[in-house]
Amino acid sequence: MRLFSFDTIDSTNEQAKRLLAEGLIIHPAYITAREQIAGRGTRGRSWSSPKDAGIYLSVVQTDYDSSLPTTTAYTVAAGIACVEVLAEITGLDVRLKPINDLYLNEGKLGGILTEATVQGPRISALITGVGINVRRAERPLESEAAFAPACLENALSAEQMGWLNTADLAEELAERIVRKNAAVARGEIQSLRVQWQQYCIPGSESPI
Image 1 (cartoon, one colour):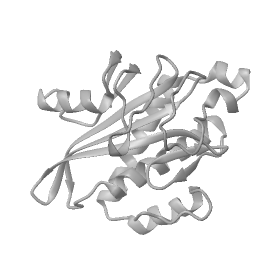
Image 2: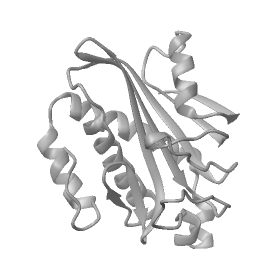
Image 3: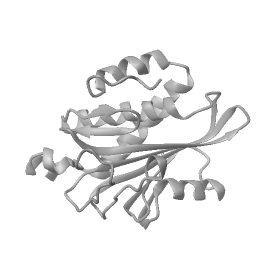
């Protein structure tokens, strides 16, 4: 999968839209940045993206042959992909909170923002944005935030942080998200519901 890597940009999702408009993304690709100055989440909320302190990633898929009219199932699929990859690489028990949050030890570790270009009844381009806090940094809280941010550095040992390769982690996340999205497109919604219940915060209701 092709990688577009940047130093400082507004947001990886916005950069994805520009690359799509310029015809530079035809096949599945992913975009990373060291820093976002206008990172965002759902409902227009900002997502703090300090330089070299997190994974700021957007996965882009074009000519997406899916008749699903909304992105909800794809957001769920991306969340499951993130939990699985983080467990495999770090051993951490990351949990999902409806609909797009990643939680670790009662702190918000990351979030997902899925956007789509729709032509008629089908999705023609799907952008899955993922932000994950990796290192300690100043991260201003939204006024309504119930929990302080979490980060991988606070949960892993110094030795584990030493061998953690964020570029490899971003690549594995991108590849897993593409595979999970394919499952959505094939209509494997019940399987995703089962996985969601396995990984969600206890008491959460599946959004799909």
